[in-house]
Amino acid sequence: MGRKRKEANESVDIQARNGEHPMFTEVLKATAEDNDPLIGLPLPSLAARYLLQANIFPLSRFVQLRGEFSAGKSAFLIEIMRWFHVYGGGAIMIDTENKGSPTMMSGLFGHNQQYMARTKVTTAASVEEWQKKYMGFCQAIHKQIDAENAPDRVIPICIGIDSISAVEVDRRVEKVADEGHAAAGHPYLARNLSDFMRTALVPTLRHYPIALVATNHLKEEINSMGFGPPKKYAPGGASLDYYPTLILDMSKASQKNITGGRYEGQSVRIAATKNNLGAPGRKIVVNLMWYNDIVAGRDANGDESYTNKQYHYWDWHTATVRLLMDLQAADKKPQPGTDPKLPALLRQVCDLEYKHGTKNSEVPLVFSNALGISKQEALSEVEASMVLESNKKVMGLLHGILGVNDYPVCDPARKFREQVMAELKNKEMTDIPELMAASSAVSDIIPTDFDPLGQVD
Image (cartoon, rainbow, N blue to C red; front, side):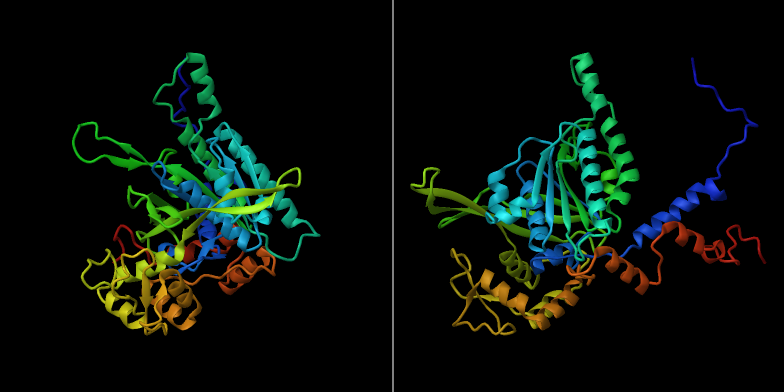
């Protein structure tokens, strides 16, 4: 039997509670949430700050890492977790692909036992399961932070989902089990994620020192007409494009691995496809490196033994030097949206140059008059970047030239909610969206002389 149609004269109630118009109120609430202060953790190098166009990695926000197979998404997620550990925080990893690597996690954490102890790893076999676990972890964190005896400091938490669309919803799994095969055309995943993002994301993150970071796969879709290049897309629906503050797309910069001495690695290109912190479209290339170290120790019986430990690290300092070298090159085409004066200004503020004959060597040497590094005492790219990071004057000029926005850095010695309230007070804003909506009179939004139909003489 078909659905019963509404009669033409049947009244439709569009009023929400207290006589508010539901759509108008939701728009004002969304505006209040968008205007919440951005507070975050400091980033490790100029290359990362250039990519995000900000001096922080944001808290209380959702970030999505997308990439093709073996593009380093999981390793980058663990690296972000390391940033939280460095700042005295913790991390939670929800693994939906059952491919977690304790060796890589420990290697990226530098085999720091405190970091490992403050990292919770769990698995999920369906979308509903990872969502329930995410909500449970958030509720536990909220309860501890809101308790009367909560510590008077910030403990930032990174909750990672690896990956957000690798598992199906329970309904789809049951359907496949009943029918004996998978079928296309069931947008259960997109609907589920859309509902979750719309209803659960803001309450779990807003005004808490929590960041949700999820990986997702980039896949190729071939044109059905058989012509044109394949388009890349990420499963999960439009909600995964709308709700993240940042979408970072990752790919291999070279199909060949980096080899040299005891080190191996791969070059990863990261592009800020969406960026609510600053200008989108910024790209950098970072090397993900690893090496083995044989460590003497004792076995279970107390006898002398050896352990082969693998270490991983993201080489942000080398990425900084090579980014500046690339941006200040006069013979290269500037990136879209950049000022033509950028190369000359960079050479003036922070001149960097490779020592002759070392550019393609295993350890290139760099010198710079602005940084006080003479040609005779040229340093490696990593050492030169560390000198740059310590030079606040040059770094401040570079931030201005490169458009790096300055946001409040989280103060570990103060409660996070207090910092949010202080920033809201500075902006003369309220904490409660409903009150903000009530304080925004219609006359303030729509001018009294507004004449959309042009009827006023």
